[in-house]
Length: 297
Image (tube, rainbow, N blue to C red; front, top):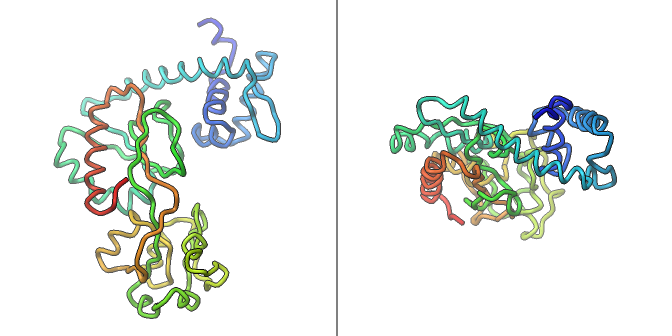
């Protein structure tokens, strides 16, 4: 333990997160600091050891043999430290911390949580609404619901629901659309932060995104859907985002079918969690609830 007094704990966290997550940006997101701050912390640690822990090149930061050897132990150590801190914050009642993207939380999940609470009155759910990728093994989060292309890292991961997209608009705008070519005369609402664009849906129709009319743009998918409800144009939505608005008749899908994006919702949970039974209860309920509305994986 005496060697710990010679180095900065924040520097060790920066080294561990960068090595585990594979880059400065991911480490900065997890630690809640800037990329520059992570880089500076790593440099300070390297200066204290007098040897590089990462090599710098076109691929970014790659751990040196010394760095690899250290990161294995640092990850194990910080995992234990995180579990110890979690115990200190435990409350008398059972609290399950679920990390979920704000759009999924606000447009679908939050409206159904009462049903889970009614079925499990002894289990309190605390929802952490964030787009930041969280490692449950390194935080107080028990379960993450996230969208990934491919399989996410980790051992305790399981597929939940494929992400499928389709255009939606107000009933009034839908009256103007009879065929895909009619999209050229309708304002198109765009999500500036979306990981997929209209070209994905248009490709099978022989159209290009450049053929579409300009409409409002937002950096939040929930705002895009609200704009569609308000009749400001047509929006390329996905099932968990638009299903409730469709059920209320606020928006309609002018074309049949759903297109898979190649991404899926996944559940990511802690390894060796003392709340494994509670996580399983929530996961089972979530699968059953989603299965009532969508085609499951």
